[in-house]
Image (tube, rainbow, N blue to C red):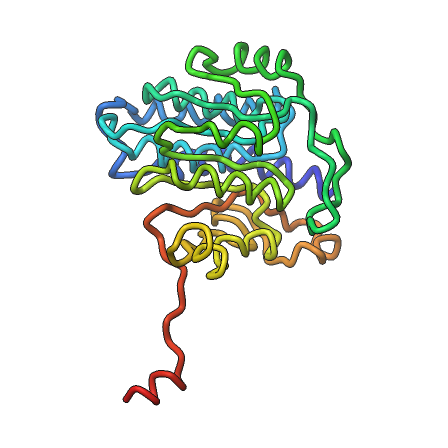
Length: 282
């Protein structure tokens, strides 16, 4: 019953979600995204949710698309996806990249998740989970997306991402494991343009999100304060109802997190006020 209610809500609110998410005064006019083209794009993304198995929402794909569409075409930067599974999010992002004349770099082992290490607090997955073959992903994008703007990089992140040397406008990390997230952040962040974005999918885990708030991590590897994370713990407010925490989800069957979280290279998530120090200096 609850699942049916959620599906009905999801379908009935799609037009509203598309209208609200893509209602922006800063979508660049060069992309010629009229009212009707916005809805056409949004409904294609919505339908792809049912055509291709995916663990992410078309709403989060629209949110990423909005950030790309708000970026002027003269600003250089590719779109990067780490973790594609069967290509659902890839297909939707490829349509945005086609519209904005950008390249979509898809990084994946195409063999499923690696074995998790003992130190990984997200190690609830099995080796090989979320496996989509390269052929399957390509076929899905070719059928439901725009494959001509896609480039596929096969291999484990710690082997492929060190070779990334192009400017990145936006990266979408759907990598599940903490150690995979850290690898992606460490190698993608230096390539982000001045106001480049990183979106993640595993946003309900506070420990997982903590990498974007860790002063020690950002000081050690990037010599800066942490950028913080918009939507940490509950996701972006894109028409979903979720209070959390994730561990209590069975008690709230109609609560459903489904919207992603993101940071931007120029964001700051650093606390600077310490009363004892301020009193000593006054």
